[in-house]
Amino acid sequence: MYVKEDVVPRASAADAALTADSILRAATDAFAEAGYQRASVGQIAGAAGVTRGAVHHHFSDKLGLFQAVVRAGHERVAAAIVARASTQSADPRAALRAGCHAFVDAITGDAAARILLVEGPAVLGWSTWRALDASTSMKELQEAVQEVTDGDALALTRLLSGAMNEGVLWLIETPENADARASVHRALDRLIDAL
Image (cartoon, rainbow, N blue to C red; front, side, top):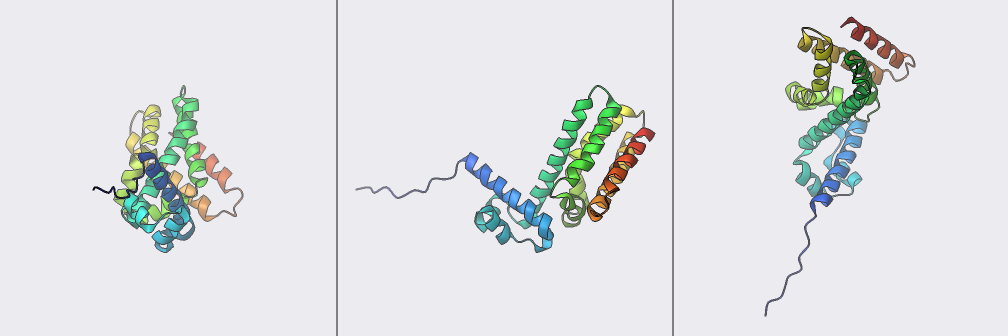
């Protein structure tokens, strides 16, 4: 006589996606609060309500999880840029301006700003971090710069990106400076006007 064994059903793809998203949110919070070195997979798993094994199943290891957090952060910022720039799509310069201001606001409004601009390059290495940036907000910026210039678009894109990153770093490092945000936005307008 054949006796059917108890079978534990595998999680559906939707359940797996929800679990991965929960882990990613918990990891974003942990890395933003404690930094990469001090955040542990065990703490992240506990905050997500899953086991360490689930974290490793979805993200292989702590570095893979961190890279996913950085990628998701870049994607959130790029989505905010596109959303704001698209409101000005009839005027390329206005779209560039709106997108640049959206970058400053989106990245400083994101819990992972320090992860994206400080720890991301340090932990992942400059070339990996640049590749992630190039596939998201840098791509959007280059397309917008090409619309308003007749040459040197790649160089101008890199210079404008660097200026915005430095402005954002200043904002997150000096939260007590009440005028810093307005100053960054005014300076950004001056840079865009000069293109």
